[in-house]
Amino acid sequence: MRNRIVLMKRVCVVGALVLVLGVSSTAQTFDAIKSQVKVHVLENGMKFIVLERHEAPVVSFHVYADVGSANESYGITGISHLLEHMAFKGTKLVGTTDYEEEIKILEELDALYDKIKAEQAKVSPDEEALKEMGEEFEVLRTKAKEFVVNGEFDDMFMREGDRSLNAYTSADATQYVNSLPSNKLEFWMAMTADRFQNPVFREFYKERDVVIEERRLTLETRPIGRLVEDFLSTAFKAHPYKHSVVGHMSDLESITRKDVEVYFHKYYSPSNLTVGIVGDVRSTEVFEMAEMYFGNISSEPKPEPLRTKEPEQWGERRVQVVAKSQPILILGYHRPDVHHADSFALDALANILGQGRSSRLHQSLVKDKKVCVQVGVFSGFPGEKYPNLVAFIAVPSQGHTSEECRELIDEEISKIKEESVTAEELTKYQRSSVKAMLSQMKSNGNMAKLLTYADVVVGDWQRLFDQVEEIQVVSVEDIKRVANTYLVKNHRTIGEIVPEGK
Image 1 (cartoon, rainbow, N blue to C red):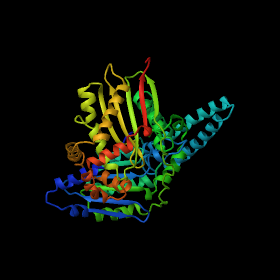
Image 2: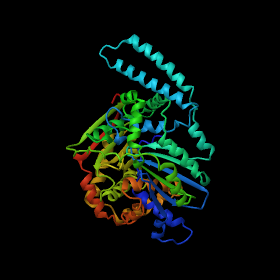
Image 3: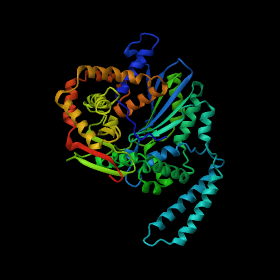
Image 4: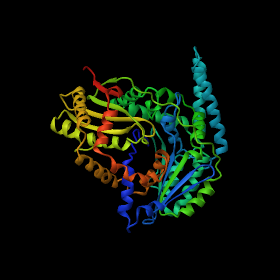
């Protein structure tokens, strides 16, 4: 599954903490809860974070690969998402009837594909040779398919009771999810170790075609998809947040199985993987099994951090997409990453301005003036690990325009810049943001996700608990200050869909 916009809010951290405090059957102290989390790091750098919960005989697993579309370079955009798809294709043991024979055919396919691409790149390609190679390629694909056991990896998990088998890719990460009966701990260990030690990217060209079609259906044939892609490429001049998670079509059409193998070995080394396990397990048993199943996997140093930083924007930018669609407006203002001291104040600003029916923009633009049918604000788009955007989206109602919406949004921003928000609004945000997350934080799976996110992105799993006070110290003066600092015209990008014929 691809989740194009993954906004892992730092307020989730607060929700997670309150959840633990609230559902505990005894009056455990904050320090006692934190002390229940156990961590073990293998010599190869792979980290396991465990929280025991014995209320039900189930356990959730969350593998956080510290790689997303932001790690991709030109020519291989979309490869993180494509690799996520390929991670379900099995291994040398799973998904094949005879790996030794299968790999011979796969290598022949790779070699032939390289010849086809080389011929196509010539100034005057030999069309007859391309036709012959194309026919040979399809013969080899058919031959390789004879060794494939379709869906065996998924089926094995499902038979053991996994009801959460999934994965998703964002700009910042690729994450793999499982939920199993607690007596299947060793099964998960064995299958996952095999998955990351002995992957076979079989049926690569077939799955690549699936992703290409996904791009067509979710982006190219949807006006909002086109707008978001063009908006990001305009808002970001240098940083790889500028390209979509699904990648550019020409890159998808050219990526090879060897490209995926190289990318996998670089970014799926144990040193770049963090595992969260929450549920009815014993941490000592988890760590013993982790040593047994993952400890012998060789590792490389953690990949070098991104070098490219988005430079300062020197003036307002605009982009239009003409389509058979109603008008849609997106505004984006540059903001710092999740580690910055202003992050919580920016989250509060976004919430009060445009999150929920009681927000200022909904009350003004939708309810009172009726110039919009929908309006919202996101803080942390398209990712949070690196400097990103506070993004506004508005859908004008019939008879109204994107320009009207923009002017009214500017008016509401100006009010906060001049007067800030009220103490009541801030208190409501502080309380409702926690309450809203409670329903999402009641599962082991979400807690496993939060632990890994906090460790990889925020910097330490303990900050999942330590940051609880930060949201409480945000003041109305902080919100006024960040509005004046970041919501400025020179740092703004405007994107809009213009209906055809207008």
